[in-house]
Image (tube, rainbow, N blue to C red):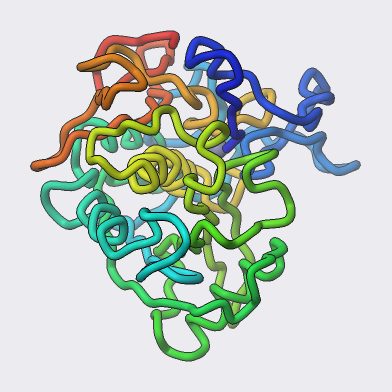
Length: 319
Ligand SMILES: [Zn+2]
C-alpha cells in the first residue's frame, strides 16, 4: 500500500511520495503489491477470464488467478526485531496483544461486515470467505539485521517455515512485522507502509506481507497519533494490515483482482475512512470489532457498481 504524508493536515491524506505511478495510464497495468501498478511485461496479454461466482463491471477487473480459499483465511505473524521493549513504547507486548485481538477468532476483523466486503471477490470455483484469523505466530530477533531488503523479508518467512516455527501453508498469509528500529530499504516510510506478494518458498506458493511499526514514521504511515486504543503503533498497523490482508485474500498471486491502473481492492480506498466517531487526530474510529474501536481504511466493494465502504452493503464514500 502506498504511504501518505500528513504534511499539511489529514485533508491531504492522499499525497504520497515518489513517482512510481508515472506509467499509470499505460494500456495494461499489473499490481506490484506495494500499492501502485506497473506496465505488464512484454508479451503478457491481458487475460480475459470471467469468474463464475461473482460479477464484474464494478471498477475492478478479474484476471484469471485464484483468490484465497480458506475459511477462515489464515494469517501467521512473524514478530521481527524487538517487540518486548524496543525503542518506541509501541514496540511492546501490548501492541502484539492488540494486533492478535484484531485478528482473533471472535471479536476481531474476521466475519465482520468490513471483512465480508471481500466476499464480493471470487475465482472460477469459490468466493473469498469473509473470515480471517491468526493461526500461528513466532518471533525473529534480527536474523537478517536491522536493514531488511525485500529479499530479507522473504528470508525471514522462509526461515520461519523451514525451521518448523510456522507451518508450510498455501492457504495462509505470512506477515513480517518489524519493530520501529528496523528499516525496509525498498521504501518503508517513503514509498509504502506495507506490501504483500508471493513467492515459491520450500516448493510452495507462499503468500506473505511486510508491515513495519508505523511509529517509525508517524507522519507518513499513521492517520492519527492519538488513537482509539491509546497505542499509535498498533492502531496504525491495524489499518495497514487490514489493507494488506484483504488484498492478499483477493489477489494473492497478483493475478486475480485489480483495476486498469494495477490497483488492488484496498488500494482503491487507501487512506479513505468514511465518517468517523470523533474527529481524526483525536482518537477517531470508524469500526468496532468486539471490545475494540479501530480507525481502518475502507475497502472496495465489488458490487452495486463498486465503491469504498465500511461494511458489506453499506454506503459508499469517497473520502
Ligand atoms: Zn495495497
